[in-house]
Amino acid sequence: MKILHTSDWHLGHVLYNYERTAEQKSMLNQIKEIIKNEQPDAMVLCGDVYHTSQPSSTVQTMFTDAIVAMHEACPTMTIVITAGNHDSGTKHEIFQTPWRAFNVHSIGNIDKNNPESHIIEVPGKGFIVAVPYAYERTIPDGFFQQLLDKVEERNTNGLPVVMMAHTTVQGCNFTGHDNASETTVGGIDSMPHEALGIGYDYLALGHIHHAQFIHGTDHRMRYSGTPLAVSFDETFNHSVSIVELNKHGDAPKLTEITIENPRPLVNLPAQGTASWDEAKALLKELPDDLPAYVRLNVEIKNKVLIGAMEEARNIARGKNCRVCHVNVTRPEQVRNKSRMLTVQELKNIPPLELVKRYASDKKHPFDEEMEEMFKEVIAIIQQEERK
Image (tube, rainbow, N blue to C red; front, side, top):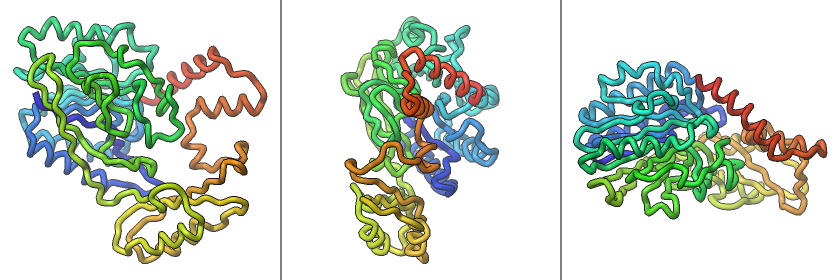
């Protein structure tokens, strides 16, 4: 069985008030061409199809048009889509019935009463176990293994088994994710890979934007990463993965295919920081015809930059680039940790981190029990948003 593994399309994402429809359409068209050339047996899209749980009708139309075009590029291909933490699980399932005419299976929520609905058979090729994002406490104990055991009963011909999940796995490289830690990335607590069961030949993961295999899983567990950068910190290759499996038990063979961004995200300087004058000089040297989003990474010591964005945009006037942000940092020895946050910085901080900072400022203890209670509240709110 040959599959195209992708995730985290984040359709509808807006970068510093710049809408990105042209780039997203280019990404979708490149994936369609890859499908046309590779003729996979299945495509697995592992969550975060949209950037928000309430995408506009224009964004939803872009998605549906793309899926139909991908089906037409390879009519025999099975398409399996699962909801991520940015998606509305309920909305994913509204059009399940008409999607079947295009061999598309859209799984938005965990169905405890009908676990078989999470198992999609690719006739004569293999099985796909599709698990959407869900708050950890709402997932039945042993659910992943339960599904894999059911597949084992049905898989009498030794066909390959692929499982899909949208979560944080311990040991992943979370480069590019703001305010991530070893235990939580994007608001999702990490879990040991053993908790995802045994019996799959390849576990297709979504959520982490950096494409990678998980160490210690014999190259059977992989994040495909996002095919289009969502932040300036994603300074790595963006791609989709072609995975080939001969039979159940065999190791997967992987080919990574790069997705080109017609308007890349450019850091000035490319690594580290520069003084304000050095950053402005780099911006002046940027080719006039280069289509790009630009972030200036500036380190200052004692002074405050006033009117920096206006000055940067004046320098870029006449160029094809879009200046998005002046990212100011200070040396560690003079940085005031209790300084006022910018609106953008505030948006990037997870709610749990904010409440921990608040408790610390108020000299109030914030123990594990309080943390779990807060996580439950956030999970309830997120679940309501996803409906």
